[in-house]
Length: 127
Image (cartoon, rainbow, N blue to C red; front, side, top):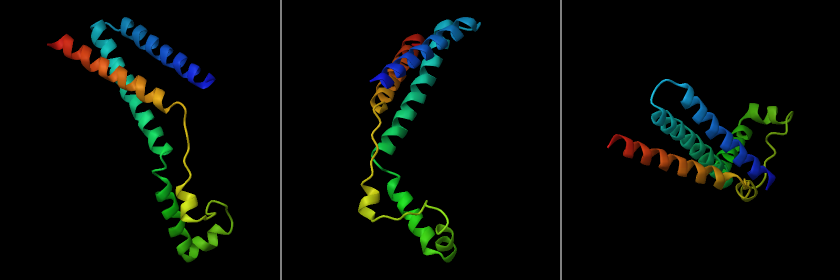
């Protein structure tokens, strides 16, 4: 819970910084705010989507395949004796590992709202 509150404080500071930066620029204020909101929204959506992909274990199969490939070569077997990177488990144990990030929904929600609001304001400003 504390991490989510810190997330909202950071997001608020990010928006305040965007508005202050827009005020200090000499171009159109509303356009600068819309541009900042768009960039913040895209960044948050990207981070949220990346966390969601990691949560669902999308890369577990790729990591498992790379470990198997490394152990299939003669040099890979020799090198794997000296490190613990390739501790192979059964496939069902490798694929079953899923992480959970409590902040994923917050990234996606705030990013989506900010992105949609910037698109809406841009549409209203230029039509």
